[in-house]
Image (tube, rainbow, N blue to C red; front, side, top):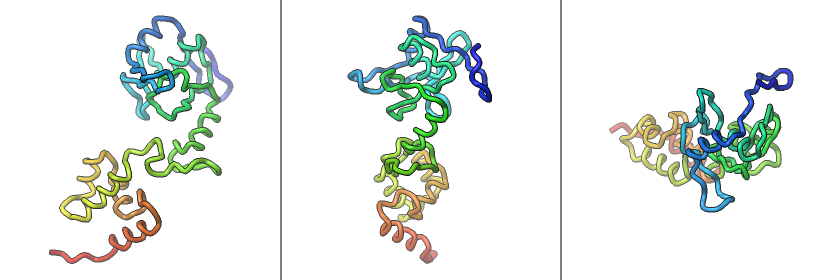
Length: 196
C-alpha cells in the first residue's frame, strides 16, 4: 500500500498488468474512432463512474484504464476526464491532476452543481453535462402540469427527476428560455385558478 501525502487517506496501488487490462476491456464499448469516448458498460458508482472488482478489490474503471494504458500507477493523483463523461475510459481523454486541480476543473466546466467560476462557460440547461432534461422536456413538463390532472409526483416519476426540480420548472425558476418566459410562468403560477 502506498501512502499519499499528509492529510490524505492511503492510496491502493493501481495494477498495470495484462490481466487487469483484459478484464477492464471486457466492459468497455469503444467509439467509432480513437477520439470518441469509450463507454463503460459494467457496474457504476453513484455519480456514474465505472467500477470493477478484480480479485475482491474494487477499482474505478477510468483510473484502472489510465494505469494499464500508461504502464504506471497514478499514485495519489486523481485521474481526470477532459471529455466530462464519467463513463468514459478512453485513455486519450484521461489526465492526471491533484484533487484540488480536479475540483477547480469541475467548477470551471460547470460539473459541480451550485458553482460557477468567473470566466467559465455558461453551462445552463442542455449545455450542462449533468443535465437530466432537454429544453423540450422541460416545456413538456410545464404543458402537462398546466393541462391539469397530473401531480408533481407523477411528473417526477415520468421524467426521472425530483419533486423540487418539477416545482422549479413549473414555476419558471429553472429551464425558462429567457427572463420574459420566467416572469410569465411566475404570474401563471400565482394567479388563483377557479375550482371546478
